[in-house]
Length: 115
Image 1 (cartoon, rainbow, N blue to C red):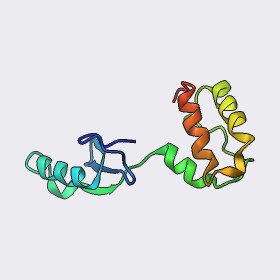
Image 2: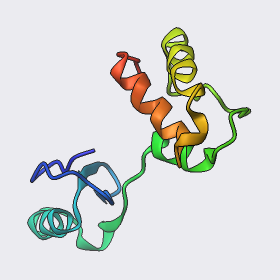
Image 3: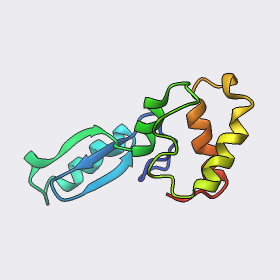
Image 4: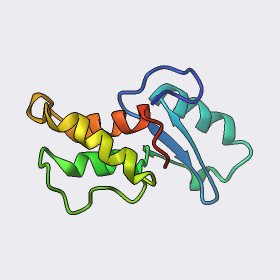
């Protein structure tokens, strides 16, 4: 994932949210700059600076290393044949990865899997 402003690879992603919309993902510096830029046009009390919400990241973080998950495939993976192909491709080296489900997601994306 890359920052929407500076296109830097993100270790931690942030969103700027008001009651109507969400902007981002941003690196911390760009998120703060965006808040400063929109403050004049928005109700400053409604803006929040917080971690970027990503259903995929939340799903990966909940997964751990277990190969048998009740929530696999996830609801956002709409191409089930590609999901199964991605899981099969990673299965033979499952224990080599610290976060094997993140590798499955990357392979799914590389295969052109839809969300």
